[in-house]
Length: 328
Image (cartoon, rainbow, N blue to C red; front, side, top):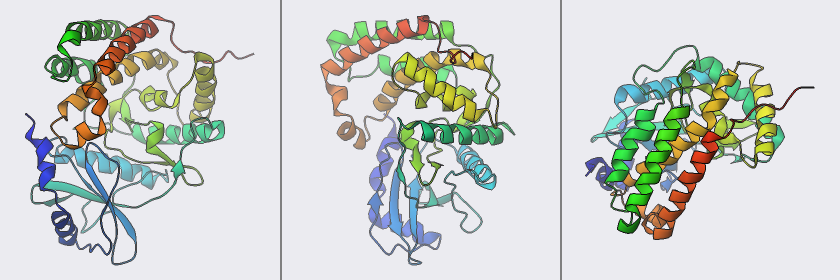
């Protein structure tokens, strides 16, 4: 049992208000919970009539040093005038402690949802990702991890082998499909890339639109290949993805160069995310928020669908990788 899952039960409204008061912030309005599974995040109105967001980190997930590295990366981007939400420095610190919790305060920002089918928005995002990777290439994280198969495949496989949510009748075929996916992914995974600091979880839900893109939630920042921050923005069939990739990389290339050999990592990274995601939910199942948010994890049909998805992903791995559109 991971006791850190239950530490959030002590995070009462009174404790949150007391934690804020400990750094000189008084909440004038009630706390509004924002969508976050891994951490606990609340919006509030301060007595200065400004809106803030306070984030309480899940205990035992990141060390203090790793969180400071996340904050510094956000601040580096802000210093480079990149639209990313950086933590506020209060009493000369961005990370605060209260009764065993670590927490951070951010300015509250609004925005529309990023439109995945809007190619103009995709071009803007590509341009800013190039700038983010310019900053990210200046140094590497020393405390945060680097993307690799141990974290994303082998450790999750150990978790899934013990997962009680998998129906007994499907356990063997599911683990067999998982093992086949892991073997095939390892066949196509390579480390012939230059690591840099990444957003790490740059999917459309982590981009807001306010007269341009605004990048949020750096919680999964780590070292890795540049393509990790690009591939989750692609969707649709192969021809649609090739068009999106062409637009994305043309804009990205104004500020950073992508080694096109990294295109062969798209499907391995997708496979790694698929396995890691299931294990992540399994690890957090004792957190009461997870059964409420992922009820389908208890359905037999869900696990059948995962077997089919893993089998299909093996075929995608074995197919030729996505390529740029030809130039004429």
